[in-house]
Length: 268
Ligand code: C2E
Ligand code: CA
Ligand code: CA
Image: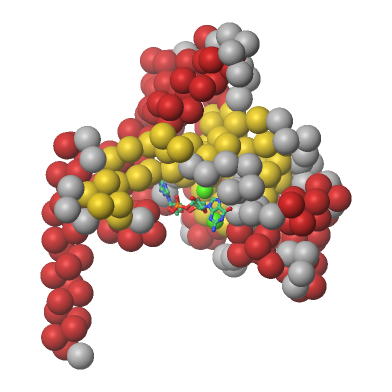
């Protein structure tokens, strides 16, 4: 057992060393997954990080993001994702397309002393419209230092940036904080979406989230939509925005931007 633990620690250290190199060697890539409205029209996308390791191949984010967070590498990687989002927004704007772009922001990144300043700078440098930049944060971030969190979010919202709660319903959700935070959106976790409508408990959770969000005037995005039955159920319950393999897999951001440019010229 001890030997197994030792091996695990060594494996983690090796991967962390590799990740440090990956960040400077161009092994990290930005993907985007489309988000559509109830009619199936494209409204935006979520950026997702990919790591193509020279020997191991694709390392899943569930494996390298926690390492990046523990080592602090997430700060540089997260900055890079936000710049990519803003540059993409600027390109879309130039094509006259008002699509939003969502980025995952980890707790450590959000708590950086100069996080607000960094966002302000990248918005200014790229000319991206702040209203189209959606920062996805998790519930755990909200629970700790709630007052600090509210203050910081408020500063960012004053810049025009929008906030979304990712994986909503999986953490220590308290409905009380929902009205205290300057939120724009909730994302229903795919674990609930995937068993709805077949599983009555998950169906009830999805309906409750949609009802609460409706009263609080929050947009809801359902993630992990894979089947038409799931999409129909969500739309019947007033879900206005959907994301999942049914509408599109994550694809390289550059490729996607190229497709959007073609569509804007009437080519698609
Ligand atoms: P998440 O933010 O909840 O992202 C949604 C995950 O669901 C993505 O996995 C996406 O590829 C996957 N997904 C989308 N549609 C479907 C579907 O229809 N069916 C199924 N089975 N899965 C679907 P991915 O890309 O592996 O990312 C996993 C997690 O890694 C993300 O979960 C997010 O927490 C984290 N992550 C990814 N990129 C970043 C990043 O740039 N920064 C930070 N801080 N975290 C990131
Ligand atoms: Ca997310
Ligand atoms: Ca999720």
